[in-house]
Image (cartoon, rainbow, N blue to C red; front, side):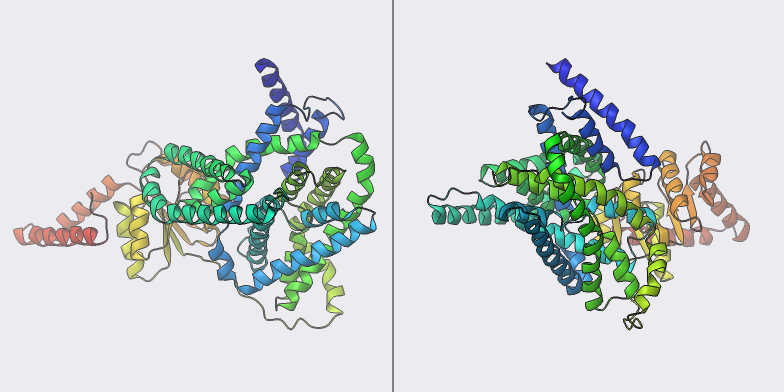
Length: 566
């Protein structure tokens, strides 16, 4: 049995990789490849993945849990607050209008009330994974429309959490409904307070110690995710709600970027199997009955959904360009839509071709919207003459308020702290990147912007504002980590000055070949300093007494700034 399972997974992954390679050549999101692989491996073709096989269903469940954990982890309410009420208003109105018109379309197509509600809500959510990935590739995440659409996606995620909670409580037995509802609400309040207290008082203390080891941080994060999800499930709620709560509890941590980057590869593996199982669920009869509704809804998502968001943004004062770019960026359906449909099937609300309909919508909209987002500026220029017929754009040009820094310093200890003192003295905006939890806490205490993460982690590097930095100064000693960092910087910001650091010359030429502008070598710099002292100062006791006094003052400064170890 075990050998058979292993063989099936190997074949499915082989099919997935082959199709993913083709999708990559076509510049398509890999989620399309996963669903197509499921279609091929499912009953329609090879019948490798049978919907009744429990191990594939279990793996798919892991994928859902990890996906929702990442969603909870990224639910940064401070981001929504910073963007203001306009994002909140826009997200809610977009949800209401899209759900309403989607519901009307489903009723018009002859579907009953509940399936219409589920499908209408499922198509209101845009894909966080796809949007952020493509915008990051385009360097548009920190533009006005990029920041707005990310804020809208966060609002959608919050609404998704509320819907999941509602579904969980609505499935209660009708006998003693009022009492059971009160009991469930009481459990929910106790759980919420308990997790909040853990996140506020216990987690920061634990994380400061756990984060010292990347491996321990990864294991703890997985244990926390499944542990909280299990406790929430034991209390009578769904595992999905537990995963989101577990993510939210860690979302405010200063270690959130590092946690997120470490979890993503594991999540991606199980998400592959989740969408493979999704594709395998489709039956020939479902496709025949779903093709027309699926195509109609696809047109609705691709055309009506962007128009709705466009008018919402224009009404709230955004420029014509930002509203247009944000609108077409949201023109696809989300992974959460499938989780919603699966939940409806699990609760017995859905028994028809709803899953097949949403799959068709996903395939069509994801494929087309990826091109729309990639070439959004060119498309805007094509549509602009038509938009100008409605009059002059009277909205004020929005200024980007992205957090940018002139200099990023990798490594605060030893050399880095002195660099930071010089930058602060010259009043140059800078931020520190460090993998030492103690350094991060001290920097936060001093009010210095800081990012916790590994310089060798490309996904973490993508979250940093490197594209706008004028200079990057690395004081970390590892040459391999700096190679990865320099390679990434040169892909995102060719004009940035990169100063690296080495304690020996073995990899000196390698770092210069990768694109470093200058490489510090402490022993050479120390020798140069003492040689200048010997050449420019008299060889007297007073000279070295003055140097000793300056050194002690510097050590005192190190102590007061928290850098009390040599």
